[in-house]
Amino acid sequence: MLETFTNDTNEIQGRLSAWLIKHRLAHRPLGFDYQGVETLQVRSEDWLSIAVALYAYGFNYLRSQCVYDVAPGGLLASVYHLTKVQSNADQPEEVCIKIFVSRKNPKIPSVFWVWKGADFQERESYDMLGISYESHPRLKRILMPDSWIGWPLRKDYIVPNFYELQDAY
Image (tube, rainbow, N blue to C red):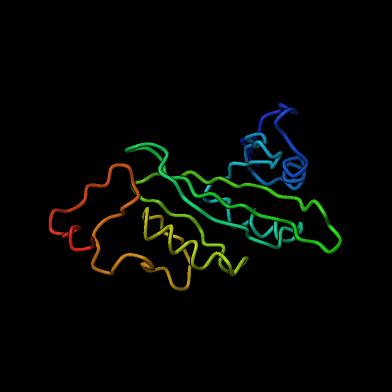
């Protein structure tokens, strides 16, 4: 049996959420942002199949991917902003996908093979917050030196005392 973690509240369910339900893809509608962009929550284990379905639905452009630390010691969130780019479309359809993972073993399937633009964005997310994007072809640090210890944008990150930050100024 398909376990969708959607609810029946139509006021926060948009057209894309209805399409995902029709195709039995598990997600949770989170409503709309201030610009009217539909926001959905997806489980990490469901993300790759939903990403492929969204690409087939027409979301052919990964506008951005970012991560944030929800709270010290709490979850990490990976956010994907997708756009359906079509010719003669003055208002392209957009969607925001949020994936929350535990900070103890943060793993999310990479969508590099769906949207090549995810390459550097997922690498930066790995470098700054330590989310491992499974099956990414070049997942390694991109901003910090390879010798850097830890994930500097986590809210609970403590800078080791052996890094001489004053040398940077």
